[in-house]
Structure formats: C-alpha cells, structure tokens
Amino acid sequence: MAVQIREHEAWLASDRVDALSRALSDPPEFSRRRQDDYERFLELPLEPNPLYRKYGYFSNVNLTGLDPLASGSAVSLPPALPGSIRVVHDASGTRAEIPEEIVRGGVRFWSLGELWRAGNGARAAFLRGTEEPTDRLSALATATLNRGYRLEVPDGFRDPLRVQDLTILSEARQALSVRRSIQSGSATQVLVTEEVFSAPGNDGAQRLYASGTDLDLADSAKAVVLSVHAPDLKAVSIYRRRASVGAHSRLAWIWNGWGGFRTKVRNETTFAGAGSAADDLQTYFGEKDQAYDSAVNFTHVATDTHSQSITRGVFRDQARGMSRGLVRIEPEARKTIAFVSEHAMLLSRGARSDSIPILEILCRDVKATHSSSVAPVDPEKVFYLESRGVSEDESVRMIGEGFLAYVLERVPIDGIRDLLYPKLAARWDGRALAWDPNAFPTLPSLAVTGSESAPEWRFDAKLR
Image (tube, rainbow, N blue to C red; front, side, top):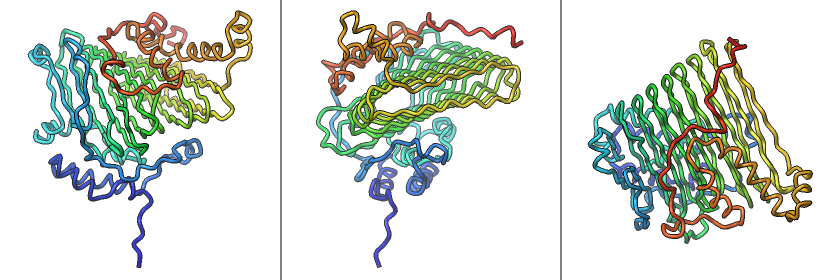
C-alpha cells in the first residue's frame, strides 16, 4: 500500500529539518519548535483568512528540493562603510563587521550561534514575537531558520548608529531564513538598511528568502528600517516585521519591492507609549509574472499616537499586487491620528491590483482616514506630455516614476530618492539588479532627517 505524501512535503523533507537543527546545535526548546512549525508548514494554507484567499497571487510556487543547508563560497564585498555595522548573509553563513569604537560604546551583538549558547534570557529576547504561525510560509520560515543575530543599543548611545544588512542569494534551491532582533535604548538613533540581491548564475530553480525583524524602541528613540528587495525573478520571499514603539519615539518602516517572483510582506507596529509615531512607506514595481502581497497592521494602545501608511505600486505585463492596511485604535488610545493610503497604477490589461484599507475604531476622540484607488494611467496626463514633444512610452514612464516618487519624498532619509532612482530605472528598463560589488555598490552612508514633505503631525484641535 503506497504511503500518501502530503502536498508540500516535496518542498522540504523532514530529515533536512533534523539535519539543520543538528548542524546549528539548536537548544532543545527551539529544536522542538522547529519540528512543530515544520508540521504546521505541511498543514497550513498560504492565506489563513478566507476573506482574502481569492486575492492571493501565490500560484506556481514550487520550492521542491529546498535546501536550508546549501553552502557555497562567500561573495565579494565592497569596502565597509566607515563607522557602521555590516552584517552579511550568504551561502557561507553570516559574518559581522563591528568597529571597535561601537563596541566600546556599549553596543552588544550576538550571532545566532552565540545566542544558542547563551542563557535562556538572551534566546527568549531573540525569539520574542515568533508566535505560532498561521500561514504556510511563516511556518516554513521558522522551520528553516539558519541565519540571525540580536543587536542591543544602550540607553543614551550618543552617535547615530548605521547598520547595513546584506543578503545575497547565490545557490540553486537555497533557503536563507534570517531573523533580526534589535533593541534600541532611550534617546538613541538607529538606521538599518536591509538589502537583498541575487548573484548571477541561478539554474532556474525557485529559492526561498525569509526575513524576520523584531524591533523594540525605548522612550524618545528614533529608528528607520529601509528594505531594498531586488533578488532575481525566481525568489519566493516572506517578510515579517514587528515593532513596539515607546513614548515619544518615532519609527519609519520603508520597503521597496523591485525583484522576486512571489513576495509577501507583513508589518505589525504597536504604539505602546504616549506620543509615539510611525510611518510605513512602501513602493512596488512589478512586471512579467511577479506578485506582491502586503499587509500593514497598526495597533494604537497609548494616547496621542500618530500613524501613517502609504503604499503605491506600478504593475505591467501580468504582474499582480495586493495591499491591506489595518488600523486598530484601542479604547484608551485617545487623540490618535491615523492615515492609510493605498494606490496602484496599472500599465497593461493583464496587470491587476487590489487594495483593502481597514479602520477599527474603538475610541471616539480620534482622527482616522483612508484613501484607495486602482486605475490605469490618466490619458489626459499622457496627452499633455505628448503635446510637449514627449513620446507616449516616455510619458507613461515619467508619470509612473512620479507616482512612486510621492512615497520616496516622504522617507525621512536625506537624498534617498536620488539614491534609489537608478535602481528603479534599471527595473523599468527590464534589467535585473544582480549582485556586483563593483558595478552595483550598496547604499552609502545615510542620514536620518525630518521630512519636509511630511512635517511633524499635530493633533487637530477641533477633535479635542
């Protein structure tokens, strides 16, 4: 009698999960967790909420033969940015470069191996927020966890801290599952860039990139997390980013999607301290058969908190996009200001996008609004540019780039639009953003600033 094989067992065999656990010397409690989540991976759906399953665009995902133990040579790197922390994840493992002056300032860094050998307290802090998964890819991310670190910035660390996190996919059927745990002390300033690329030479097989980021901001801290997602069109990716924002702290999640085959982004931010504020700014460019699925979840708990979520995507060919923005305002979260904006531009008949803004308001003394649209390029704008001598293709491109620039102009990083534009232009021209440390350098030193286009929020006096 033949043994029935569960649907996705061909993606990842249980013996590979066991081998990974032994290779990384998992502590017993996480070894069990890894196996439990592997079983959940086999049983769970891709989308747990039945209301959204018809919008899911994760067809044709086939991760057969996925190997979380795939290894290879270390990639070549450009010179490190002076005075910054650089963490690199590739087929050779994870390596970190930390300047001595940062260590002397009290910043602590643990690699995954060091965390596994540390006491239960360090491991618990690292794994906080990894609750029981509710969907297949989240469970797969935990079952294949093979890269990670924890970073602690002490209270009052005077200098702005720059962390450059690089991931380069280079092996066929590779699985890189990275978890970052960052604790930023009071009155600190941290800028993290997560840059994901592929090295040339994939044999056409799909591979997995899983990214988990847990950020804990103490009072009066400021943090910016900028992601540039640009792997090849065979990468299946899932991002899970969570943050707890302390009193009078400010956070900006920024995500730019320009590569990958299927990509899922889940951002969850809790406003735990009075006077806290956060932006979630996302841009997408999809072509061919790419698909993006984004969900932003803001939970306002404390009083006088401010949130803003702006998502914009441009899709052509057969590309797909879905964005969900949920704002929940708890009963005690008085004087909250929240805004959700989700807009998509379709450049061809085969492209499609869905936007679903949601407000759950349990407190009367608030201001919460949303806007949403999915539409083709405005023909009147195209006609206007053509009347000035601009070709139709160039007109559409200028309008599309300006549509995405609306988001980049609100990013609290000095000159980010000029830095990211060449990457967007390359994707618009149909060129892949393959990893090359000489021809395609990583993002340079960046400065966190206030945004001129989006000044500090002020609560509307009429609502008091």
